[in-house]
Length: 366
Image (tube, rainbow, N blue to C red; front, side, top):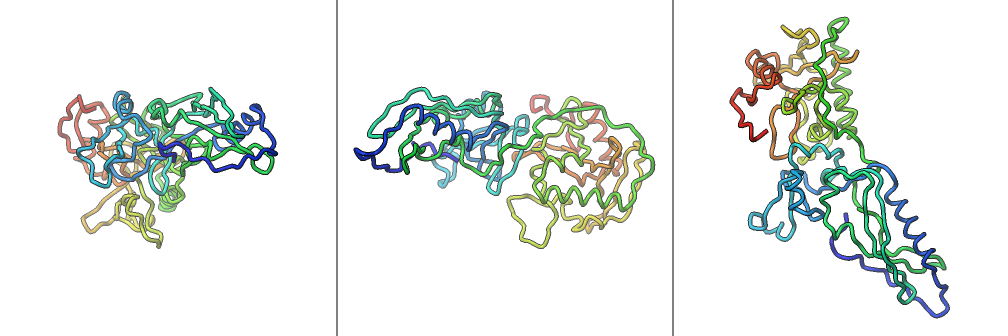
């Protein structure tokens, strides 16, 4: 990730006998390096941190708040180690643009097809210096809040081995985000599934489904994991299916004999089972014939997750039950077989402004 300090040029010695670089050749070298480092497609930037607050030194804090993209902190409340480094916390509404994890944070989608415009050129001691402006053909609101010092830079081209060579990096960002960035940022609500399954799910079908979901989380393929979920999000006007990849990023896979990363959060089965085949029984829902409850024995009493027949396949039911200071995350172990919890769940799906416990929600917080 670029810091805000200007690029420090590598010293290139230009002797009197060195070949001269034409402006056209220097421009070609810059654009070639740019297209190699920032190819067309979906582009993002890494937000460092895995807690409530993420580093925000690339962004204009006022813009983030005006666009309701994120909350920002103030210098007075930062720990000593954070002094001078602004931080942000994405809002629920716009965390959906976080579509990929890294070892040290999250990647936020900036848009599609990065661009580079050279606005001025001068030649000094055998080195071409260009004023450059980075852009995006199809920007997201997050791109629009990048700080000007990130987008307006000075690029240099010298001579190495008789050829023009860019000094330093031309990349918009040098970080751990994938290229291209994965999708999954759109929350698209649809009618609740009603098609009946040909028969109840077998133990093997449920085990296979749960294993596929866990494998997708373990492989960081969150788009695939989300495709295996029948998601309910009562914070959206049409709740069923209205989940983005961001609502699943915090779910960690089951332990696999390696040390857990504490920044990943708890396993998606919430320590109720260590193995996807450890459930006791599968029972039909009393009212919804597309829904079945998978009972799991627990030291704290019986817990359950649900599976649902959707578009000709069984899917795991996930519920976005509560907004969080950190990334708002769906839960899989949601105990929808409990009558009191199921009643509140259905009331929320009908649009009643209540929380997971049935208490009224202030409309201004929605």
